[in-house]
Length: 335
Image (cartoon, rainbow, N blue to C red):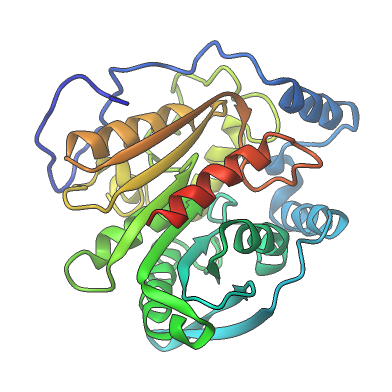
């Protein structure tokens, strides 16, 4: 599927984000399962994340994860330290039973660069390892505001190197190294992959689910997204995350903070999943087009009626999540 109509030369950095010239998600209607989920949150009086504050939002995420269904049992799950300069970051390794080497997936969770833990991502990582028959290495990267930009990127870069060096310990194939991220994690992953080009492990595919790739559009006067006032992710949430992640305004246009502004020449084949009823849909579509214009092979999957977070949700809550997990599993298998 073509996702753009003209080719253009990419540059090392830009001051404004490239705009899409293809289809737009604006005006989409939520799928029935997504509408039911949002309506239930509305009836329950669930507040927006920024209204909870930092501690409250983190506690809410932990409580929601604890209340959810656990993922499937796997043959091996263990926690490890990954050196990042003079400090360490944690990672959790998941391996299903397999007699043959498995694709190795380095996963960075979402959460606006501010929220998220290994425990909160545990059920999804178990489902992923089981469905895709892959070795999963989930990265507990540094969070803002305690560790603002670019600490999390350094952690994901270190995790890619660590995965390539250690995957064989758990029957992972370092020659089939996949980088997967959703939301903020998608932005972190694609920057980390770019930083390893030519000087690090070879990533055979990156998979980006509704990635956060442009911080420049979160300023006063920005045209609001049609679903930017609705749960589970609002435009004020995004602005709040941005303010905690980048400590100086100039950082917002750094290609490492906003990869939509960067040179993506030579990036590996990329699978992109987008939801039309998600405030991140426009920048995700622009990034898919940006990659395509640079000559990158892009598989773009539109879920026009889906909301933010649809990949990682339990299919008992959002049935179409199983469809999205199937797309990701196929992409991993073919990497």
